[in-house]
Image (cartoon, rainbow, N blue to C red; front, side, top):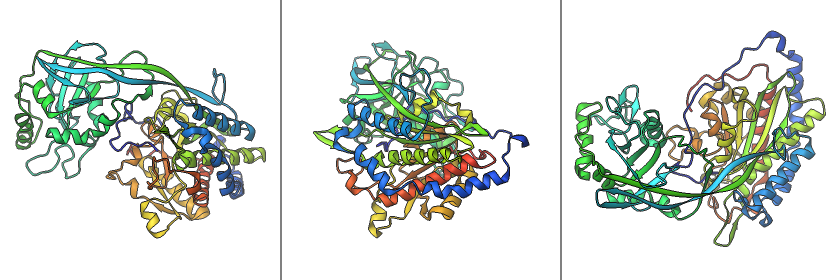
Length: 547
């Protein structure tokens, strides 16, 4: 699972809607009820082929030292891709990728890049990248450029509150305050309640608003003091000198560049002091609505944020089972097969993260393939996909969502399996192995949530825990695994997860600590939900909007 508490790597995520609509189905296309019943009755037979022993067999290979922690772009990950594709082929799945040297591989255009020279000049005052500001994602300032600065309050552009009214930010550097405004009563002005919105929680919301308005960059003032800025951006400081991996750009700046800047940088750009800049919040609270700033932006501003890049080939691994009477509709089952590789000479095997999910996908694929051989093939098609570069920011699944092998409008649902073989801190206290965290099933489809509960009650008997499904969950796990790149396109998802344990993202996440009986039950639940989604008469409805 992606290690990202500040959720900054999903940089191309746009909160869009409407791709997964419920199609109309003619009576002639409906299978007789007896066929549906026949398939449902057969489900337990094929679920039983998913065993702890088989999961263990696969995982002892994929999470062995030989695979060197499966870092994106590494020899070990290439070995894992070869193993998974070989399993798919031997089980009878089809490689669905056209124009690829290997039809089981979807090439993902990644690049390894590293920051070079970076600074902001405000007159003769120089602020340094990595100390006074950090760039989140791509930047258009590869060479030194002049910048025209404009202040846009909190950078909010909602229906009931817009900081962009009556200002032109096209091609400009927009300075905004972090967080979101409150009224004199202490309630947030956007929500009208004590609950903060995404405007204050997710920098991408402000970036997307700035992009829509045509800004070249948006600088988010982070923290209220130098110490607070350093604390909030410490993780960026740690990674600044390390190469990072991202999707290869197409030569154009797809969205507004985003920067976290210190209060000193923000104030200098606005020709004021940090104290006066933050006093703006009082003016907004008093007015109860967006208020123009009284700052005079500095004219002499130059910026450079150099980024050096090299190509890094990788691939998603896909296996496909074609459906029968509803074959144009597709269920996608995912895991990520990458991990973090080798650090300081230690191999991070990633047995649970996400070796456990990957071997579950292999086993589900084998079970469905056997069912098809036996004349019990799914009515809808199923795509089994292990994706690359999840640990680098959900990049493999993002690439698929942007370059789908099967149209997103035909994608019924995504079942995502990321870490299912361990107990988390809470469960370890009582040795409670019989649970799984369910995340996201109700956010876009009430039917998916109901199906998940029914399949568990009928076939598996796990305790379904919804703690991390809470919209106010500070861990934000819903945004931190590959299902999110389907959900943001309006495709219903369910995410199975065992929670965080002491070995999470450490060299001690090894096979000997996996509870294969627990992983077996979670994998069987994912199987039954997939089976039901693939074989029921009607495509599940998309009837809510909680992306």
